[in-house]
Image (cartoon, rainbow, N blue to C red):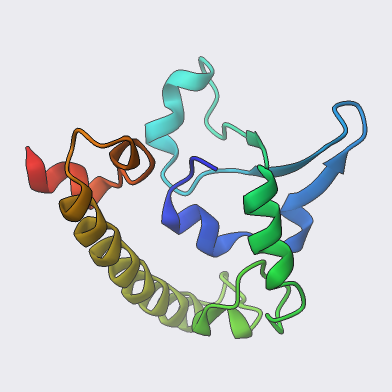
Length: 136
C-alpha cells in the first residue's frame, strides 16, 4: 500500500472490503492531507482513495483483527477508544496522541531511509514527508 502513516493509523474496519468484481480486497478512505491528492480529480474537495491490498498487506491487517477495542484496523494506543471528534476536549486529546505516534513512525522510517539511501528500491516505499524534507 502506498499511503501516508497518518491515513493508515486512522483506518477502521469499515474501510476494508472485498471487491467481488475484481476478486480482491480493497482499502477505501479519504486522505487526511487532502491537499496532496488534489491532482487526482478536478474540483473534488474530498477525493476518495481506493487501493487494492497486496497479499502481504492483507496478512498484516488480518494479524491485528479484533485487537483494537474501538474498531480500528491497527491497535495503536490511541485507537483503543472510540473518539468523538466533534467534542473539542476529545479531539485535542486524540490529535495530540496521534501526532506523537505519527512522529515516532516518521522518525523510524527516516532512519530506515538513511540506512538504505535514496538510490535503493526501498527508498521508493519509504518516501514519507519527513524523509523527503531531510534530504533536500
